[in-house]
Amino acid sequence: MDCAWSENCEEVKVREKMKQRMRTRNKRELKILLPTLREKERYIAFQIVSEEPVTYADLEVAVWNTMLDFYGEFGTSQTSMWLIKNLYDEQMQFGVVRCNNESVAAVLAALGLINRLGDIRVVVKVLKVSGTLKGLR
Amino acid sequence: MPFFDLHVHSAFSEGESSVEQLAATAKLLGYSGICFAEYYKGEEQIKKLATEIQKAKDKVGIEIFLGFEARNSKELNILADKRKKFDVLLVHGGDVSLNREAAETPQVDILTHPEAGRYDSGMNHIMMKLAAKNNVAIEVNFREVLMTSKKSRSTLLQNISSNIAMARKFHAPIAVCSGAISHWELRDPQAMASFASQLGLTLNEATDCVSKVPEKIVRESESRRSTEWIAPGVKIVRK
Image 1 (cartoon, rainbow over the protein chains, first blue to last red):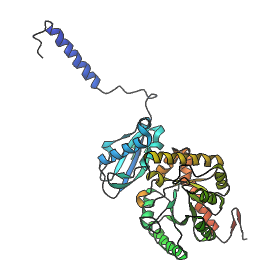
Image 2: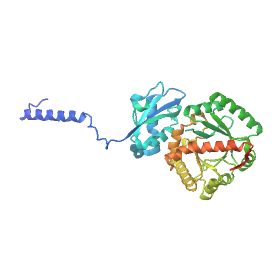
Image 3: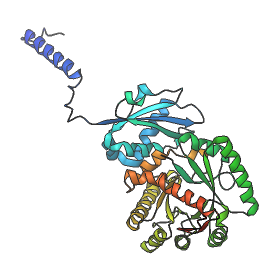
């Protein structure tokens, strides 16, 4: 960095270094919450029954649109829903969605309302609900 | 826990899928039994349907029941007379006078979507009391919800919630059915129960609406078709 124009070049360099350190610290993961403050999660395993194979992109759009249409933005926010991308198996058409423990019925209801993924007619079959990913296996 | 779907249409009436396709999909989704609710066209139709159902039962391996859905007062009277020849009698709700007639008829098992095509819920407290007295189940039809969106879905859900609240108050049975006309419209029973729990039922009550209530309807119907059955709560006991 060019600080030839500044009289306090050393001071500017030190300040830049400190800013860089702060940016790095903020990028690190948040410290884990206390157990009593942590949201209790539930994992819902489901399978897509369809005429043709379904891509993750279509599934994601359908799940989010259904939730948002049915419950609205605020209602969806209350469920803390998240579709887990790494766990979607395109061959078996098996997926996992995470939500909080109080919203399991709401998320299941929304999965039941999914009619089509893109142009493909589908039926969502609920396999299992568990508190841990290990419990789904 | 056994799950039953008592309102499914096959290609024999207004459906798009065959009896076998619907039965196979129902088995895949975890149902213990489904009922085909067809429109009455004559005695020969009953025999034809019964044969198809028996074939599908043997092939797929779930319980399949035969039902008829009355669309008007005349059909209701004919079907009520022939009650012992089939398993489940449904009435196509929506018209207030037909809703009332269905609630007053003890032979009726399910009044389907009483709020269909209406701005109000189609039922009042008098009709609900009659339905409770005659053991007529009020249906929550999932297909009606699937086929609507935005404002019309919102109005529909309001009316369904109103019927559910009244049914709970007067202890009328509630049955949650898919109303599917295609095997792609069948739904997972847990999803249907969860959906009903969003409309005013507790989760246990909603689960009973997909399992115990329809099971009770079909078992009572089976006992009704036996020669010992005289009237509800009365049967001949031979020693």
